[in-house]
Image 1 (cartoon, rainbow, N blue to C red):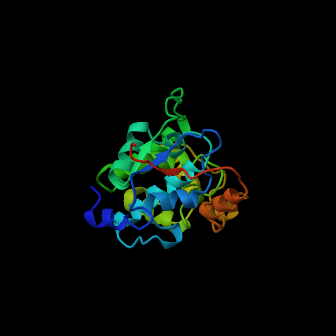
Image 2: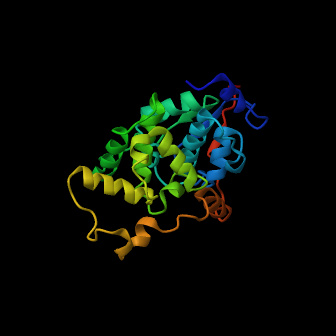
Image 3: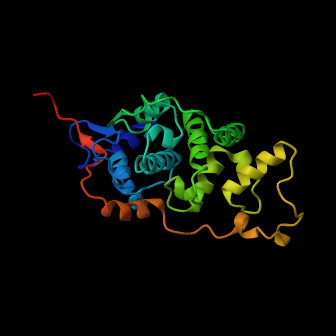
Length: 250
């Protein structure tokens, strides 16, 4: 369970108001595409100001980052984040207790699970190194976000690649430790899947001789999705925050 100290840390002047509501449905154009605003509504601070020295604070930062980016995209937040509706509700209850979640668009047709997502999720679940629900949720979230087109750390809403490496080392240590050459994490996942199935992913025995070397080991620096989404949000008009005040009955 989330610690009392961490619960208290979430209470800031901005959040010390009547119950907040996380609206998941895009209706009449009001849903915000500002991931930074979403993150702040969950945590009370901007991503740049997040304090993540201890494991609990780091896990909370990671979960908030993924949810913030997922909510800034089209579609149901649960689906974009890779969670079942019940698990999404449990994440809010355990990690963001000051925010009441309403996932109003999960009534849509049940999605067919993507085989690729399921394979990556099962790979991660088989290499868990942490107890509790967080690792299980993160395995599903990482797997779903891995099919997005950017660097994995970007599509998880993290600030840089080092946060992704810390996340994987903490929750999926036996798998992370196998990445001895610092391969890009998505490529590494698929390489592990191939090796576990007895397949050979590469046509060359030595990476330095491969024409696709940059795809596996190239630079992964860049601007975070949080900053990128904030620029996009400034170009969108007539939208209201994804977090709104739930007014008491009159």
